[in-house]
Length: 276
Image (cartoon, rainbow, N blue to C red; front, side, top):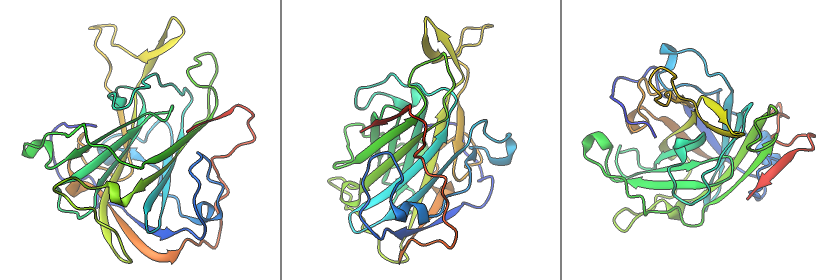
């Protein structure tokens, strides 16, 4: 949830063709369904400023599907240290490591939605009638009604002794929920185009008395700035510029690929933890 400055996008916005699943999707934190295996992965995430900065230290990518009711999102985040302590709804999730979704259904750069989720499947969601730079005020009481989400962890949660591998997030966002009293829901159809982006906030950390915390600069005791890794680069450290987001292209065809990607989130690692 970054809000610093504005500029031209680093590159032309990315785009993703989103297809329909052949069978129902079960939100369980695993990508077992054939439709998930056939859906195409996005490119790996890059720094929010694009090629101004080096590549992210850890990889992130996602894929999407849709049906008449939901937009489905599956993200895999490589992470050597998986930690999350904020467990109350609508805590400021991005003050710890998180995954963030930004959606502007009609692409008018106004009336858009944000969802943040951490590794224990806790959520923070909000609605913005206008961007912050145009005087918008976040409506924190707004909720994504009917949201479904689950996290699977390939590693150990909040354990600083060992190294982890990744966490997988699976989300179903009801189209009906992307609305307010004054803004009707937008239901996509074949060839609909939405503006969306995805961000991963990742903090440098230190361990104090066995517990992870954001790392501080020893010179001034201030918290070191976070990394912001995104799907479509913004060109500046500010996610709240919808005109720089990527394009989500809805297609009525079923998901299909000639070469299936077997890099599923499910692992033989016996330490996999599922949080729903």
